[in-house]
Length: 142
Image 1 (cartoon, rainbow, N blue to C red):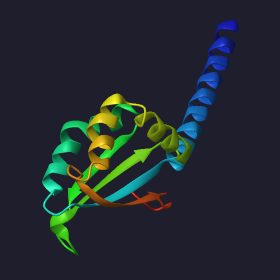
Image 2: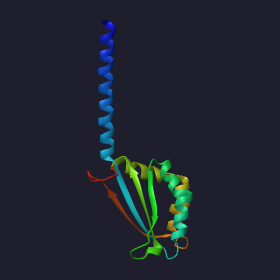
Image 3: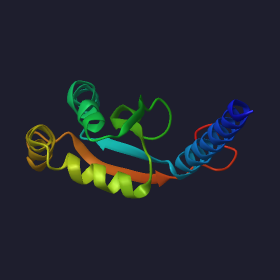
Image 4: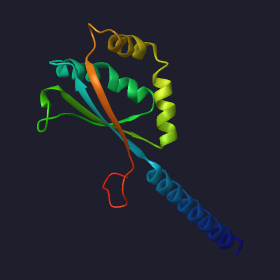
């Protein structure tokens, strides 16, 4: 009899733990945000920027905890030959701010990106349009 009580209590405990995990996961997913960044490059510099993202920047983002969702070259619209677009994901807006702050402390980020973009002769980026996006309830990305 005692054995069955212990098994019943263990079953209830596992059920409660599983429910708690499911609720926590749903809340985590509900708070996830995305950042859409559209770069206009200096004339003719899109491929150099794409190479820098492939070879360096995307890895730095991962090291800071960001999720690389995707990178694109624009093929329609205005100024497509100088437009580079990417999407990042973060657990929350607060996490996003912390991750970008951490990224700014990386020595390789300062050397390969900040120093280059401050130098008029080597600059690749002309402008950045950055948007924080929160998924709708019916979005496939949550």
